[in-house]
Each structure stands twice: as C-alpha cells, then as structure tokens.
Figure 1 (tube, rainbow, N blue to C red):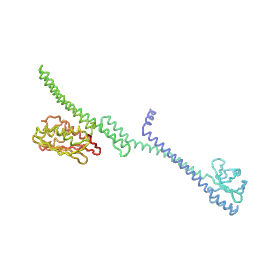
Figure 2: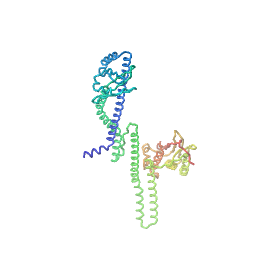
Figure 3: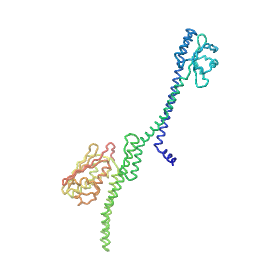
Figure 4: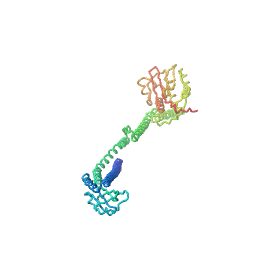
Length: 473
C-alpha cells in the first residue's frame, strides 16, 4: 500500500518539480563550491609562491652584498618574524652540498638528505618535497648566487591546506541546510507555480458537475499560465453560451409549437368528423400546409437567433454599399406603404461602404421597415437616415406609429414577446429578437426610443471596418 502511494505521489508534477529544482539547486551549489575552491586554492598557491620569490630575492641580496654571517643573522630574525610558518633557508655548493641551512620545525617532517639527492635546477623551477607521512608538501625555489653557490628558500603548504580544510568544513556544515533550502524552495515554487493549474482542475470538476457558471480566478502573473486561464475562461463562457442557447431554443420550440400543432390537430379532427366531404378535406389540407409552413418558418428563425447569439452564425461578410441595400429593401415595401398612404422619406449618402453580410442586413432592414409600416396608422410617415460616424455606419428608422410603452420597451427583444397593441397584427414575435441577434453577430448594437402614440426610433450601429474594405463588384 505504501509503495503504491509512493509510486503515485512521485508521478505528481509538484513532486517532480520540487525534486528537479532541489537537484539543480544542489548541483549549482556544488559547481559554485568547486569553482570557488579551485580559485581559492590557486590564489593561495600563487600567494605562497610570490612570498617565497620575494624572500628569495631579499636573501640573495643580503648574501651577495654582505656575507654568510649576515644571512645567518637575517635567518634568526626570520624565525622571530614568521614564528607560525617560517621559511627554509639553504645555501648549497654547486655539488649540492649543504653549506648553511635554517630549518623551521615543520621541516623536520622531511628527510633533508632528499634535498641533496635532487639535482639543482639550472633554470627557475619549483622543487616539491613531500613529508614522511605524505600529508604535507614543501615547495622550494632556487637561485644561483654570484659566487657559484645556490640559495634555496622554501615554505610549507600546511597553512594553505589549513585554510582549504576550513573552507571544506564550512561547506560540509552548510550543505545540509542548503539541501533543505533547495527542497523547501522547490516545494514553494512548485506549489506557487501550479496553483493556477489546481484552480483549473477544480473549475473543470465543477463544470463536470453541472456548474457551468464556474470561472477560474485569473492570476496576476502576466505569463503563459495567466494566458491559459484567460483562454480557458473564454472557452467556458462559449460553452455556457452554447448550452444556454440550445436549452433556450429547445424550450422555445417546445412552447411555440403547441399552438400550431393544436391547430394542426384540430383541422385533421374536423376533416375526419366531416364524413366524406371533399371540400372539407381540401380546406383541412390547405390549413395543415399553412401551419406546417408557419412551423418551419418559426423553427428557422429560432435556429438563426440561437446561431447568432452563440456566435455560430456564419456571416458571408462583403464590402458593400449600405445605401444600395437600403434602397433595394425599400423597393419591396413601397407597395405596402402606398396601401396605407404612408410616406417614406430617406436621407442616404452615396457610397456608404461597410463590411457586412448583405443578405442578413436585408433581413434586419426588412423586419424593421415591415414593423414600421405595420404599426404606423394611415397617413403616417417613416423616416430612414443613414450616415457614417466614428467608424460606425448608423441607420435610423423612425416612424409616427403607435409607439411602445415604457413597460414593454425592455421586453421587445425577447423571443415570442408581443405587446398588447401588437397582438392584433399577424406575426410570430421573433422579428426583433432576430434583428438584435444579427446586429450583435456583426459586432454592432441596436437601440430604441419610443413613446406611446408618438412613434418609435430604432438606431442601428454597425462597425464599418473601412481599413479592410474592398468593394465587391
């Protein structure tokens, strides 16, 4: 059981991140220690060699300007000045026979006869002699004197080794806290770095449990994790919008099909109860056909609204002249306006260029103009104005119709909603919902101002996207 738990926990990203952080931290520390140790060792060695060279020159000057006795006196002072680590001073003949030697106590660890066996170097070379136990080394520099003798000055490396040993001991004492700090730091940074991921997992679990409104808290790290969380939240919003749209569409379809299906059934029952009257059968079939067309129309509009609201509507955007689209749409409704003696006035600039789906824009304009004619009494007026402002194409459709009450105004965009005054007119109550959905799918908006018995003004704002326009021919 424990082995299984251990195996599972080692698979977690946080444990692996902690492990690798600690390993890298520890290896980095070892590398830094190694480099520092190497530099310190070389620095101490160079310092020792420099000190030996300085003393070698000093003693050679004393000998050559004075005598052997002067050198002996200086060697006595040397023992007093460098009590901790005095220098070896040796004068030998050209046959390497010792003529004079000042031997510090530490040099008792070596066999001095070894010095007489080593050939005196003719050039500046270092002689290294090991102690009897092999733990210490003694470094000697040699120079030739004017009388043909040789002067040798040496120094033990014990002081240098003592400093390096102390440095290694400090490292040994520090390494365990460093390992603990490495593991602790790795765990801290792993937990901190993976916190947004854990929040992401928690949010996904909430979504799996049906909580579609769940969002991941956005970290203020300004890195790839923050970007991931942003994209994930956008994806959740998209999914939630699609699911709500599907649910709303299904609810609306179920609700809206009841009335036409009831009429459908009533017509069939009436035909069946009429006996063998062919005219009744024919009229029942005609009614059924009309109701089926109405149902199909309702379903198509509901699907269009759902697609537009969820961002799934495919818009065939083109660079077009909006003035031309308005004029083409008005041509269809001039006849209806003439029947009600309604005057349509327009103020349209030439070449009002925008990037839109022309068919969908005709659908929007058709709905609004049809409503304006439908709810404007005989002899009324309709004004259509279009212009460009602040990167938006703006279309205003104003009528002198029955208007909309303040209670009904916020609800006119709802699906299947019909105000009391509009119930006498034939319609599905889906037109304005579709208009709003199409405009918003274009990245625009629609506003309305209305007062009862004074008419309404619908204002459409559509981004012109002039920088990407290429007028289609």
